[in-house]
Length: 296
Image 1 (tube, rainbow, N blue to C red):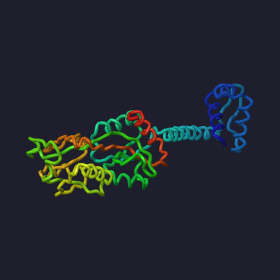
Image 2: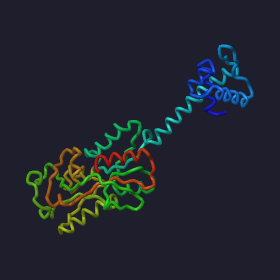
Image 3: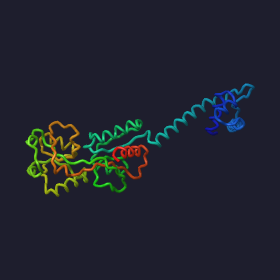
């Protein structure tokens, strides 16, 4: 028994005759008649009684018609679902985003645009620093990550550059620096700094420290925070000052003033999206296409 034969049978029942059904399904009457007979032979029972005005269902034919309608509807739903999954119209995406960039307009705009274009795809967004994102990407625990990388060439990963960030100084609103901003990093040599752990984001950490080495500046670190939100909370509490990505200023943080220094502007902090080269998720590749449109 084939779905094609079930479709022919339903057409005969609903139109009431072989001739009318042949026009509906665009199959010649002799061929349609043969398919109905093959279906009856396969099932070992008569499905239709023929009469001068057309056909009439037998008891077995009525039972098959009821089942055939459900089977054909189920087949249609399965085909539609698989087609939607195959084209990325449905499904889900797991996305890591650095804590700093959750509120950045470019990132928020990207997620919003994707949602508008593919409303049936669900996002699972994980606020993660770059180091943990890389680990999860390579362990197949994330579809994609928005993070800091030192270059586009990453073993096992594909990348797209999203944004060019720089560094910024964060000081307590009650600090003298808030009223009289420094002109250079030299003025901050005796200041107490709140810093992050290298293990949380090695690429970011090394890039910042290399920039400071070129400027012959070494911050005096007295406090450590697990991520930029923790660091900024400590700055707001007056525990020190911090140098963070400029994107941090998009997150409203009472009690903090963000200050620009030309020496910090000069430190390029590129933001990338990365994903496994072997990830063939259609939903992911639709996101990549949207990034190419927006940032290409």
